[in-house]
Image (cartoon, rainbow, N blue to C red; front, side, top):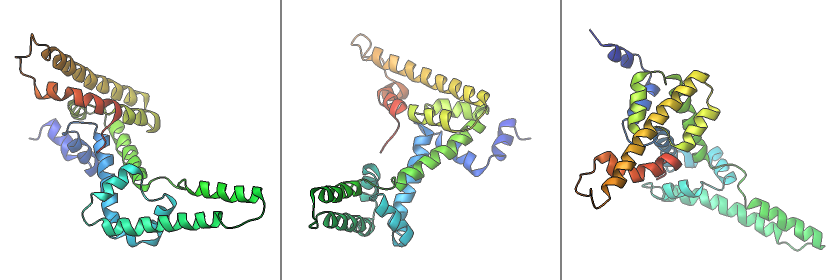
Amino acid sequence: MPTEKARRQISLTPLQIVLRETMEVRGCPLCHLSQQAEETYVRSLSYERVLDLKTRAGLQASHGLCAIHSQMWLHVKGGSLGVAIVYRDVLRHLIEAGESATEPVRGFRRKRSSLDGFVAHLSPEEPCPACEIGAAAVERFGRLLLEDIEDPDLQTLLVSCGGLCVPHLQIVLNNCKATAKARSSLVAVQLAAWQQLLLDLDEFIRKSDYRFCDEVLTEGEGTAWRRVIHALVGLKK
């Protein structure tokens, strides 16, 4: 006869399974999931998406991708042609705006107005689409996390992975609709994760003292100094 835990696992939806599997890895699960969504989108640009005119128009308006996701695209195998096509569109758009702004005009005010218009073109009209994809993943899985937060198995997983990073914890608590009880439960689980990280940091610092340096660091203690940065500012590749 299946246990209560087994029965709960059988009834999980695909997204619930994805969330729990992600929590089996150290680090904020929402960071991992948002990055996966962003990487999938960026990889898709190198194949079918870069040929879609609507996608190209959106990327022209956003001046391509932000600095982080542009670097991600540079490392996608076979991405060179897609990069060239998209950023050629952006470059042409800027050249046209610059040429229009520097055409001979009469009057200082008209000249200044033209240059101000060019300066405005230097700012993207739309946000980076990869950033929007990542933000949507955070919202989607953040809501799911709050819906399932009373599940003891999920709570255990969330503590063991280190909980949410501070930026994503703030987003979930502020933007994801949930009951006060669910939000309070999330904070309680998060505090438990932080307490464990604090213990690991304390031991890392203590065992770094020459008097105790012969004591072997555990895996958690040895990585605590890195994990605390990720916990406070999030994971970025």
